[in-house]
Length: 236
Image (cartoon, rainbow, N blue to C red; front, side, top):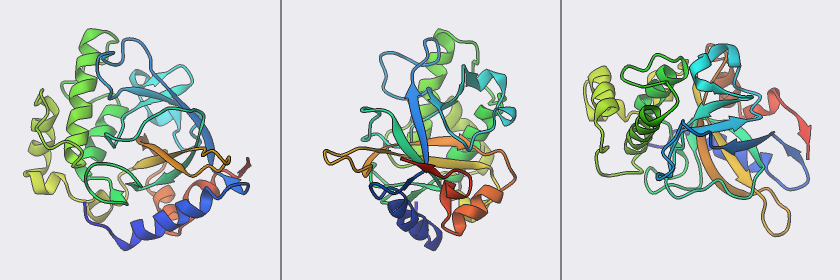
């Protein structure tokens, strides 16, 4: 995805947020829940806990597990070790990934798919925990990675690939930066940060999707460079 002035500002703001010993954003953890993912596959679904930005009232009960919500990875070469993480809200993946650069703005296709998923009405998705859901989680994860240029090959299961191409009409349209197409889409990116050997929270970890509780106000805060600090100001 092409870099925009907005995402340049966001990257600078994110770097400021994670300076050691100063203000952190949210503390989050990410776990796996049996029946919601393929144990032989590294991708989603994941259960993210602790986010102040996701309102359970805006997620379907099908996509809430315990005190967390279900989400997917955006990058294939960042991981979820050494928890917990500090987290900031963004519109792009940062400092990682096999494709798309850094920052790597979220595509409209991935945002649209995740919105349908979060609301519990993604066509063709089996929401019943078990083998069917695990298989669909893998298919959706592969489609998201393909949209984000993390995976060159088409998904092994084309269900959600066909769905997103049908929605937007072409590959190019589905891969557009979503903030340029629809800034009020209510889907954003949570950048996760881990701790280095000196205790600084500056090690980039996985970037994950979140469905926002408002009609774009949070993204306007993002555009001002405030990220999640307008919502949460926790001391480390």
